[in-house]
Length: 366
Ligand code: NAD
Ligand code: GLY
Picture 1 (spheres, protein in one colour):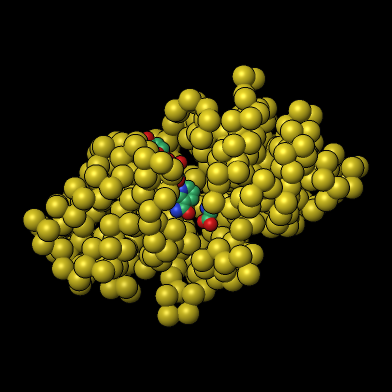
Picture 2: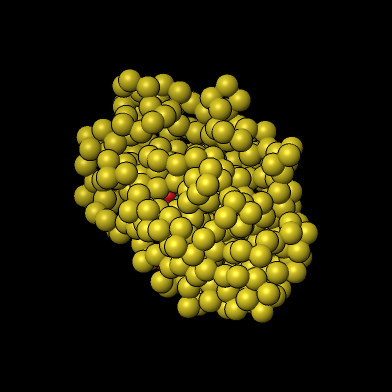
C-alpha cells in the first residue's frame, strides 16, 4: 500500500493506492471517520461491477446506504443529472454529516464531486476512481464540474475530497482503449515533471498494458505524487503561480481536436497524445528547444505513445481553420494568440504565451 498526502493545510487529504483496496474500503476510511449516512454515486455500468459490492460492505458495517447510478456517458455530466442526484439525496435524507462516495471514471467523479460541493453547501466526498485516467488525474486535485451545452466543464467548483481510495484491480474490467487513453496522461507526467519516471515507463509500458498489478500500483502512485505536489503549490491554477498549468501539456491542441472531431471519435487521452506530439514539435518550431534535443524528445515521446497503442497523428481530414478557432475560444487564449505548455527537456516544461497561428500551422504540418 502507498499513501500520498495532498498538502493543502487544513484541507490536506490522503490518496491510498493498493491492489485490493476496495475489499477493505471501510477499514481504509476508518480514521475519517466514515459517518453512518453514505450516498454512493456511480453509473449504470460501474455500479453492478464495483459500486454494488461497496454498498454491501458499507451496509454490513452498520451504515445506512443510498445507491444512485446515473446513465453512463459524458453527456450525463450535466445539470439535469446533478438535479436528479439532488432529488435522490433529498428523498433519502442525506444530512450535512453524511458523505458522498463517487465510484467511477472521471465523468462520475466530476459530477458526484459537483453534487458533494453543493449539497447543503458541501458534504464530505470520497473519490473511488475506476479508470486509469481518473486514478492518475481527475480524482486528485479537487476540480469538479459538469458540462454546459456550449462547452465542457463550464460549471463547477474546486472542492477537495477527504480521501481518494485507488484499487488498481478495478482496471481489470476497463475496456483496453480506455486503459491506453489513461496511459497518455501517465506519459504526460514523465515529460512534464520526472525524466527518470519517463525512462522507467520506457522499460515497463508493456507490463502496464498487460495489467501487471505491481507496475500499475507504482505508476499510479508516482503520478498521484506528482499531481499532489503540483496541487499543493497551486491549488486553483493561479496564473501568477503558474504551476498547475503544466498539467495542461498537450491540452491546447487536444481540446481543439475533441471539440472539432465527431463525437466519440477521440477519447480525451487519445486527443492529448496527439496534442503532446504537436506541442513537442512546436517547441522546436518556436525555438524553445534546440533542434537536436527537441527531435530526440519528440522521437522518444512518439515511440512511447506508439508502444502504448496511442495515436500521434492529426486526423487526416482535419480543418486547420476550425481547429485554430477552437484554440482561440479556449479559456486560456488571449486575442489572436494562444497559450501552450511546451517541453524544455524531458521532465521540464514551461508555459509559452503568444504562440502564433503560423507557428501552430507549421508544427501541425511537420
Ligand atoms: P469515463 O468516466 O467516461 O469512463 C470511461 C468508460 O469506462 C465509461 O463508459 C465508464 O462507465 C467505464 N468504466 C469506468 N470504470 C470502469 C471499470 N473499472 N471497468 C469497466 N468500465 C469502467 O471517462 P474517464 O476517461 O475516466 O474520464 C473523462 C472525464 O474526466 C471527462 O469528463 C473529463 O472532463 C474529466 N476530467 C476531469 C479532470 C479533473 O481534474 N477533474 C481531469 C481530467 C479529466
Ligand atoms: N487535469 C488538470 C488539472 O487537474 O489541473
